[in-house]
Image 1 (cartoon, one colour):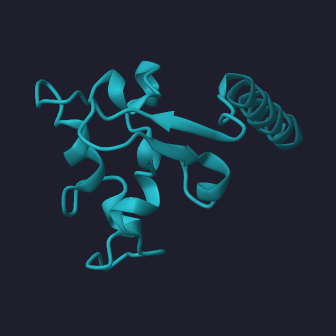
Image 2: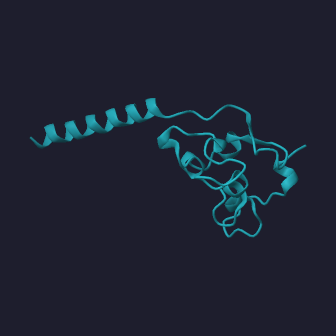
Image 3: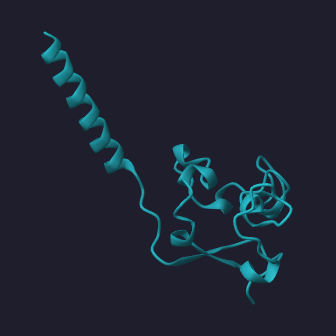
Length: 118
């Protein structure tokens, strides 16, 4: 009986891994352009350079099928904070935490021109 339960648990685990792998969305290859409604030059973002992070750390609405920042974050605040704040606002912005030299979790400090290339 114990052997049967162990087999059932292992099978359930393997099926779960297979389903989650089939549902997962692969990151786009190469750089993508992230719009910002004209406040600054468009940002060129390469997922491969951010591979050590988890998707959910930026794509916090992925369960709703929303993967593009500008699907929710517009030029002005509405239901969601505006795109500039979603990226840059202290302790909230997804880019701020890793790329602002004042962040306690900075990974690589960047300047505006490093991302907003004209």
